[in-house]
Length: 267
Ligand code: NAP
Image (cartoon, rainbow, N blue to C red):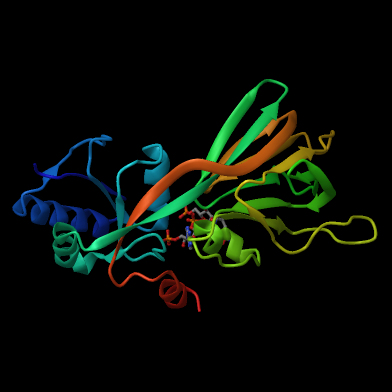
């Protein structure tokens, strides 16, 4: 039976050109091209950068099938191949010369006076104020109270997201084979008036981070940002950040190595 492939591309000229070329080549190689996204697809191809990849993962609710990213001139940390190597990609895919890299996700449960909501991030989920005021968060780990954190906010990153916003905040780069969450402070205040942790905390996958924000007249709305998308809430009673069961699988070819990629993109 022919393999079914769905292609998602951003609107840039190079991505659209790459999409046309890839469709032609896949068609010539006997693959079935789906015109709309379906969970029946055997492979999802994302053409663009990491932003396009993240957009596709949320738009299609974390697809269950293998996903391959084609980079069209961005940083492309999730993306596996360059747009000039389409023939190599088709050859390797046809020959089964690839492995799947499972990526874990992080979730947050938001409890407000009005009800509950949940958000999932592939890179991260963070909490911050909706103004320039500092925010105050009573945090607990595994149910034990740790401290009243003061600053701009907290970012909870997955290993895959450790190279994104987390890294810019001074967090550590984590190999995605490790099952952990990284809690990184955003502009923590550490003075005689306020005591806040200033470096990242690593949590095993079975522990969750509880947060009870201080809400007052100055800070009565807070933002939850998941992979760059913002949801604003008022009257938050509590938040719980934890490992999510949702996982995605990236297709990687024989020469993929996480640390080689880190070196080529960052160091
Ligand atoms: P964006 O603000 O337009 O782009 C953020 C940059 O982060 C892009 O260069 C993107 O790569 C790169 N990126 C995304 N995920 C990455 C990862 N896992 N490892 C390394 N780099 C990564 O926003 P966007 O493209 O929609 O992406 C959303 C992400 O941006 C968020 O999840 C957050 O992590 C990140 N972000 C970073 C900062 C910061 O570093 N100060 C601030 C806000 C948001 P491409 O060029 O390939 O798209």
